[in-house]
Image (cartoon, rainbow, N blue to C red; front, side, top):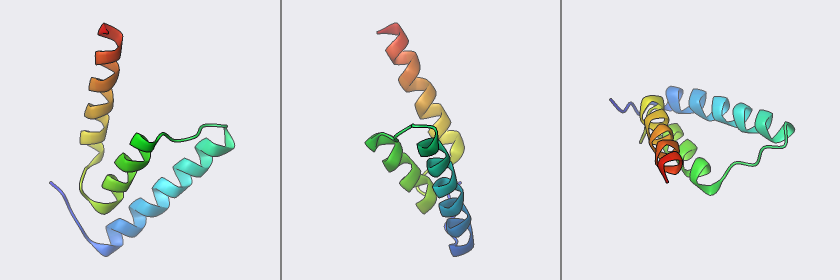
Length: 65
């Protein structure tokens, strides 16, 4: 279920900004793919479950190479 409300968008935007900032402090630079996924999450196009599943599939595919 994709929910688009201004309040939820603000919360998601703040949480994503904090997570990205924390990663950058640790020296982690987000990929373009991650930036797009986070943007889709903030806008309500994707939810966390979808992002996690896509990530798992991407790494399973890499491992089986």
